[in-house]
Image (cartoon, rainbow, N blue to C red; front, side, top):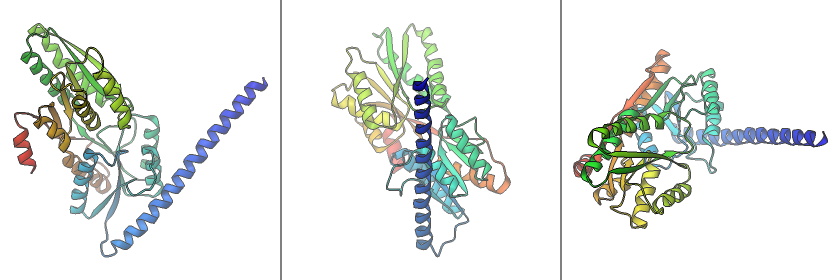
Length: 343
């Protein structure tokens, strides 16, 4: 009996400590953020912005987040709106959920957040809505919340593009009766976007019945928040006695890690890499023949859509539930034209 009481008391104490730490983290974050806002106001004394939005990604340094933010800033400037990449100016790293709490406590005019279906994020988005702050979910959605809009990509079409690339690989290698495909999925994502992409891949693979080939697709859970964990998991895949014929990556980090690992472990030509996004590193990988193809997303367009959604909601009280950005398949055939067009 005494042991049960001790355990219960210990659990209660731990819960109190967690709550206190969370509150202190938010208070510190709000204090730092308000000091930044004060300095920002002083530096832009001659410019008065109509609204102030924040963008929360949890990965401010990725090329994808930077490109989206660029699109957000360009669209915001056209309408006299300033958008901050929340967390970028903090000396400490804050979790996405803590950044949401800081934004709500700071009473910003709008929030753009890379989301998933976690219950905690649902509660925070609803809390923002109760406070009169519209929230746009970016890339990943939170369908259980009262977010005003979702800006993303057509996951099913992306899956079909990946599937067609694998089918073309099958046609190039008639000696292969069974093709093994590994799809790297984000271990930390609680959303349906990955499932939709995988459904598009699998449905495309069903066509192989007509060409007498068998494709075995395996989902490999890989951490997308820690580059070192991702590198270790990918190394394990490539160091096995039998490696996949193709690896499909669903984010920028995994694509970059697979590209580097294939080069490091001398597996170039042994495995086809199907990547995600069009960072300079990934494009170079296609030019060098290491990466077979990648899906490029119009990230700046996504950023512009985020501003459109928040502006419409703040002005009219409603906006479109979904905005879908354009995608482009880049491979050896069109990479030079894509590079030239980008320049």
